[in-house]
Amino acid sequence: MSRVSKSLKNAKVGVFFFIVSIFVQFFTRKLFLDNLGNEFIGLETTLRSILSFLNLAELGIGTAIGFTLYKPIFDKNYLEINKIIALLGILYRKIGYAIFGVGFIISLFFPMMFDDTSFQLVLVYFVFYALLFSTLLSYFVNYHISLLGADQKGYIVQQYFQTFTIIRVVLQALVAVYLKDFYIYITLELVFSILYSIVVRYKIKKEYPWLKINSSQKAEIIREYPTIIKKIKQVFFHKMSSFVKNGTDNLLIAFLISIESVAFFGNYQLIFTKLGGLVKMAFAGTGSAVGNLIAENDQKNIKKVFWELVAIQFFIAGFFSIIIYNVMDSFILLWLEKEEYVLSNTILLLMIANFFMYQISSPIERFKNAYGLYSDTWAAVAEALINLGISFFFGRIYGIAGIMLGTLVSMLLIMVIWKPYFLYKNGFKKNVWLYWRGLLPIILVFCASALIVNYLIDFFVYDEQNSSFINWVMYATKTTVSVIIIYGSLMFIFIPGFKIFCLRIKNLIFKKLIKKP
Image (cartoon, rainbow, N blue to C red):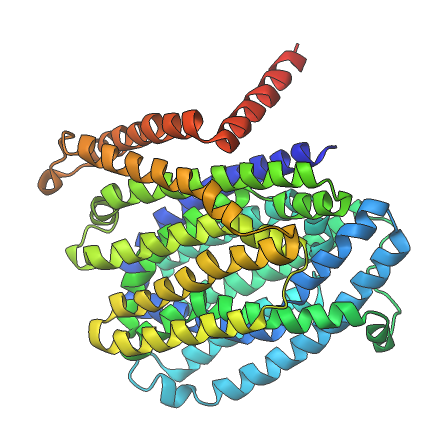
């Protein structure tokens, strides 16, 4: 199966399950808020953010191992793959013990951290440790899934992960509505994590019969891979920066504003997270495909694929950004039926800007990882410090908007400006002005499209005071169609990479149709 075919299979499976998951989670979110309360949902989200902090101990091992697996997979070197996976298992077990130890120490401070919550500390501890043990399963049981990802078979993981997630969320919704029991609600999280780990481990054994699931390799194997250890140390700083960028907002909101505000912010965050996840699923497998492409070292093909990915990712970023700006507030009001859940327009714009910059920077990050370029550790540290400093200072003054501002500034300086320079200098070995020269027409097309679409939308009638699901769907459909026609047409006409991508997809679809009897 070719790289493109594998990438499309990953995308199809991922998008299908993710869309189903989105509908389930949006439907159940309101049930959770109404039946479990804003404070409990805020508490759960805050504890998850603390666990995200603990996962920093992972040090980016999975990323570094994934990079190392591309070549032996391409060469079908099963002996080397087994050794690398054994190394992964040894490192993950060490990290798993460290995460549990640090988690235990942090939990000792819960009486001070959650002294103003109305919940008993027994519940706080139960939620935390149930989520902690669910997290540790990936370190001790199912770490082998890194091989599936590097081999462009991430769709196998997604099939099981999303299926188990959907079933769990539906059962949690039933518990919330009929039992309103916090303990059973969280217990389901742990039970399904265990079931998922068992099933995925069995599937990996079946997919790779030559893989040694329980390797006899000892810790001495670490010395055989000094390059991997070096990469892991470098990736740690990037993981830390990623956590600060994505994982500290909820913590800062909880401790600078209130736990209930975490739930309000979480409603918007859920939408952006799901959209980001949907895009990630659509591009599932492209990371390992790019890794294999780099391994072949075809410079002409590398350049072609890079600009295709830049064009399509920019289109997706602009597509969702324009639509969200115009339909988000009305959707929140229709979905949750309370004005208090609607955040200010400033917060919405900042969240859209952060989403947009993350999406357009994804191709840069994908190629940077494929080249194994992690040595710019200072940039990761600078991004984290800028983010935390601005978020903390302005968060105390402007609340959620100030916290989001820190993320915006750090992403602009490091992800948008620095990382393209670093990739072009050390990966492509070319002048970064080639990137900005190629990106300028795409930026102009987006700006022109946004202005035209927003002008047209003013003619669409939507009465927020007498809103209904049908009216909102019609309004959202008109907005979406306008964006597709205007933005899509301008991208197709003026951006070669986007045009090539569209024609490639059209040809693949025609081939599929022709093959059918």
